[in-house]
Image (cartoon, rainbow, N blue to C red):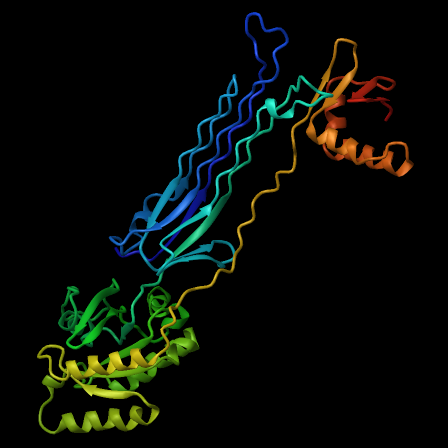
Length: 428
């Protein structure tokens, strides 16, 4: 079964925690802090694989996590970095944030490799927190967490020209004749399931990529049948070829078919419906008597005044095919060479990680000691001699959970809290 949509969970790796340790060697008294830094978390990377043309792999595996960084060690040993997770996707895959449907990135054209989620930085070991006032830091920085997202993958094929038409009008036969593609061909009364791509080589001119978009039915723009599954593959094409059964071998009206398809394109995306179109009036080898001229005249009278040229062809015998292809090439040459790329709509937010480490403990003198770079920084910019400054200090203690930790250690009213050069009596 062809798959062109998938929902997966991705996550970059957590950074490893910094380590708390002190140099302990013979003949070295009071060795300083030597805790190493944690390793960096692995990145989550998307990469285009030219050998892939479906999202089938993602039907079986739904979670893709990068490796976590290892914690730091003694003697300033740095923790190992986490392993990157590389996810291979076909060219033309759009990655969206699952809940909003907003585009995160488009893996197309030059964008063949992108780090989508960066791994968390490793935490610093206690060697970094030694200061003249705190030479024995008993804390280290925790690793920065990775980022987790649920994303939707959508494959929108990359082709210059798209073949559209109702089922069983000869699109697959046409594609097999004009390109190197080898789609399955049979007289089915239902649609091809897989979009097929082929390269058209033209004598004396550059070739182009053509895609057989699975057959559309009325109501496709509203999701009837596999409507949305198929319509998304037309979004990158710059020229559309409507293949119709001009001979009405199954009783279909080719004029009504083209109008129905254009109506579906307009309803799905007006920009697509406005792109240059060509009509391939197929199966002219199946006409009997004078029916051929009447049928072709009706098509030309209806659509050529709208600027849509009609080419009588036979995908089976090859009649008229070359003229149609050269006309398509001219249309492509006259169009701007802008690549149809889906713009980024969703910005990945890195988690807030401003909570630097601190410790709360009781020393030998029975004082409650609170230390850490966050505490030291707060005391540096707070005027505790003013009423407002002390009020800010109290809110800081409460909002950061320090009061809660002091109470968990059993602090009572009148006990002393020490913070670097400051001492306070605790009162509720």
